[in-house]
Length: 249
Image 1 (cartoon, rainbow, N blue to C red):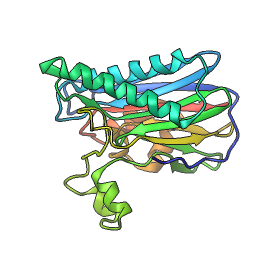
Image 2 (cartoon, rainbow, N blue to C red):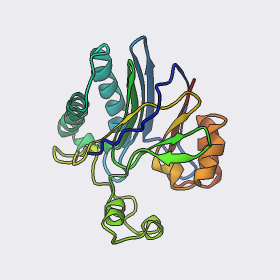
Image 3 (cartoon, rainbow, N blue to C red):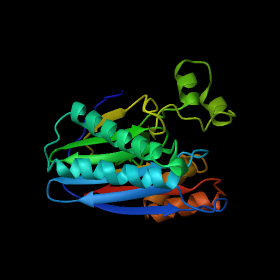
Image 4 (cartoon, helix red, strand yellow):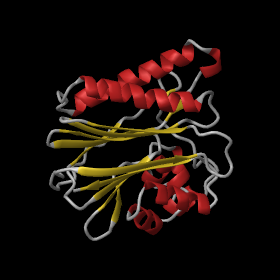
């Protein structure tokens, strides 16, 4: 679990856009995005159903809805990483249980990345390889999350370079997910974030960042989430592609 703090200031408000597209080489969308905003809580969630498993589209939607329900039920009473870990674990347990109770959904799983702001405190949480980025006032893109994936573990160990990881045959293998089996949620990523006004937070599935450059993500974010997914589609992404863009005001 990661808990590095981005030492910036809390935004006053946000303007948010979302986009989730099937992509040119898929026949249905296993990604799902969800946004909630009330007096005490701001919440943006993006999930990407795990390919090769059953019912990825069910897992991603269920994860978004369960996580949202748990967080909104707290009514602003969410103060530390322990609370977040319990909520994500409970969400995981629900997805696993539903999969176990339905043969057509057996083993269904999803990645997760979310931005949660409760009062003055914000967090990025994730499991798997969907990503969160921040664009600062200098238009510099920084990856906040760190992929829970086989190749990223090898990069951190010094076994693979980042370039080798991109082209590795196991590049899509994740090492943590919501759902699957009871043991699939091996890692929960949590980072405190307090971005400045004028910054932008971006949540994306691997069908986006795996096919367009950092500069293209920056350029797209100046428009909307749809502009980012359109760039991925133009780049002939082989996957579903989803994005959430949060402009902090």
